[in-house]
Length: 382
Image: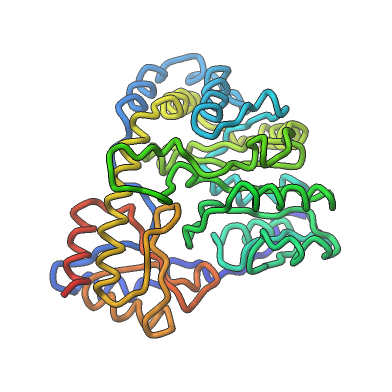
């Protein structure tokens, strides 16, 4: 049987009426609802794309598993940015057409079905649940996946989603908590699915200084002290959408347990889930251009600081998130839709917390331009 039915409150058409109100506000609409980058793609990436435009990997069919250069770049990135030696832990990699595709197809590619259970946080990125539903498997939502007692004795658990830094809350797991999840999952034969797309966007201890180093990144599930020196039963997802503003390039990858990656790669080849050849070259350049990542990190740090201060002035109780690119707040009214209506009247669109499993909250994105963030701050402070 093919894809199963899915259901989700994650439907952007539901905020269309609020956008109409916001567009009619003085000064127009400022959209802080989606996490879509607005800054330039690094020069290194654009040059690499142009150079590779007529390579054999462009006019011929590209490699599903990635070119040798891309695979080398991924390994270099893990070493430089995540303190992970892929070879030492017997990990393999496969590029994906954006990280959302990897998330949505994960349960299906792992052959989960009717009697299988996939654990995820109650407040989380909606595609975890949608992907599990598409495979016909069962979703188990828990308050905190690091509380392993909430899921380790549940019959049928086959996988556990971890998201650190978290979209939408910004929560960051310590290495110790992640190691506990990996150990507990292994005991019951479950796979740890670690979504680390915001790994280089961490703000704990940020000083608002140009000296802040994004490569002091959050713990990786494939780091030796987390995975006990082995990639067995661990899969990590990463994307260049945020670190390099490459959302439109659809550049991401899965890394981890080599046997699981081998099986996924075989299926991906048959269904044509392959990154175009020139884009693979651009992706390799993006992974190696860590200086551009530092520039982008500084931009987001500044925008988040401005946004947090403005939301406080408006009456929300919030602080700088530990990680990711969003400010997560409890609705002043207690209901996200009521707050959405009030914010729309001053032209600001947030993302309703109901999309992420928390209808009493809202998410504000810092991926808007400096000008848009400054304008939003001015309106919120009035």
